[in-house]
Image (cartoon, rainbow, N blue to C red; front, side, top):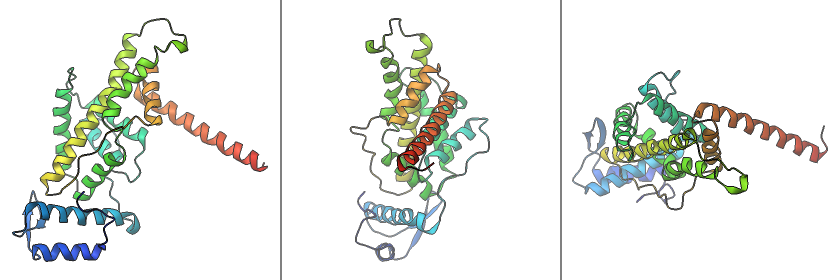
Length: 272
């Protein structure tokens, strides 16, 4: 971004600069109070973005909650959309929670599943934009930051299902039979989650820009699925597309691995 949190300006000095630049005047834009002055749009946008970044940086220090509310149940597309927003606006998003919420949106969103995922992109984009109306600037910035910190929630996810399916044909594993239709469909389902994430990534950037903020496009060069994401893809394929069972199994395995690691550490230290 053109102004970063690591700038030499303090939070107070950035606010002062913004006020001096726009003369302290305010106006309304998309229902939000914004600075209004004859300054160039790009400059005003950069200052707005810098101040929002400063607030986001200090949020953990003052105990401010940024994440959106979590729905108590997911029974429809609106609930599923809110679940995705909650999972991806947490300060430290949990990969499995994000993937699980995207899976729920795929189930409840009733998106058109065409070969190019165009219908899915358009229809999910409408659901996301509708939910943005209930979100603050800070929450939208947190969502965009999640994609910046986790670029695998995108192109890499759109390919992880196919990678998991192809791994089944590895000759070293001794498999001789052909891939089943269920396995191929399961891999495609995981890929679909990536296209939903791509739709959200593009939608949130457009929304921030519409609100007058200047944000960079997420750099995805060289991004690959995280080990946890790849494990999820493989387990979904093994379970014939059942994402929730896959997540439950992985969480149980992770808990056992943590337990074993603790026991091994204690034994190494001679405790117990």
